[in-house]
Length: 335
Image (cartoon, rainbow, N blue to C red; front, top):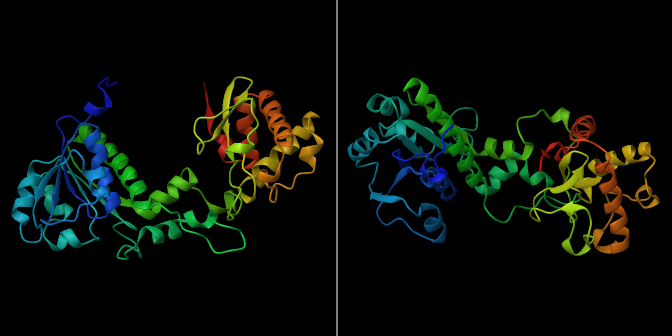
């Protein structure tokens, strides 16, 4: 096992960053943070805002017009280990810089392409903004009130997510190159990257309940969380850790549309245990308003779930989550 610090894992590796989309800067930034030497190629006069500085910090700049100076680009590619780009499919081929050409110039080169919908397929030539990627990936399906159109996620994230997936794909290609000596073309779709993040991995629609918009109460407001409850918080937006009989389990207790299925499913097992308080019997999980729930009642809810998890092992809870299709309860954490 490699014992080097993460900042040195790619020491000596050279990255050529030709990305255009703002979020796509992030892929080469990750490789740079792992120790690679990153050269960013861009046209003179490129606008620089705070986003640009955040994701291009530590990179060496090379001012080139790749449409007019392909010979200089090829010289850089001969010495590079990685090329990261986000041009529309076919653009680099038109310039004589497609992967087949670059592979002949540098057989060890790993070329990573980040596009909205990938290099092939019926949508490959379509352009897409962050909003369109979030919509076509299904991210917006759960955002907003159930009886209204979806709302967009405020901060642009899709190309950052795609860049993170691109960095992972690039490292996998590096592992393969260490074994074969050959580089390859890594094809990254922003839509598929967001879809994979949302689903926790590829899945078929028929295996999970139909998604619904979650409304206001997708989570639990901090001011109504009971004090002293046997729940460990890592971060307000991360799953809650509950104690089980042999460690901890991550379970996101949500109110409203998002949490109705998961919480309702667990009530059946509380009833089987003979430990289903009256307050839980009377809750409509789709409409309950946690901001209107008293701290005393919230404490009773919390305590019931705490006792339920404490009675069972990792394996038992995992089997329940599979049977009842409780997604977040499948994230078992040992502490």
